[in-house]
Length: 169
Image (cartoon, rainbow, N blue to C red; front, side, top):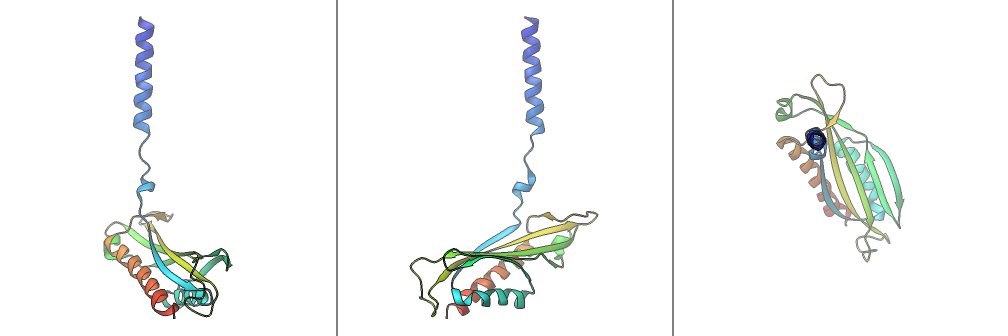
């Protein structure tokens, strides 16, 4: 009987230790990206979108993949540093970096609809941020503050407006 009691106690102790040590991963709760569907863009206007992103916002394209009329494209910028907003500084953030990712797929059934190009793409954007906190040496993902979210939303919506208002013509 004593052995059964000891086994039960040890089992309970192990269970409690495992339960207490498995904390929720806080990085999975971080909302450090903002995605938006930009709209459809003609194949012959894709470079215009890249140019707008680099000229209007001073981002530099670091990677372009699968730029074809059958698969769509993937483009990504280098991290670009911006000044932290007041509400970010209050949280001990000393630097903020932002990156834009553009992805697309061929817009089926819409070829030639917007321009002389035979192909158009459905384009999505994702704006990602990471921060450097005072006293730290590594950038980490960080949930947007109100002003940080306003910044990425404005950037995303301006890209969408450019695609829908300029590149469809």
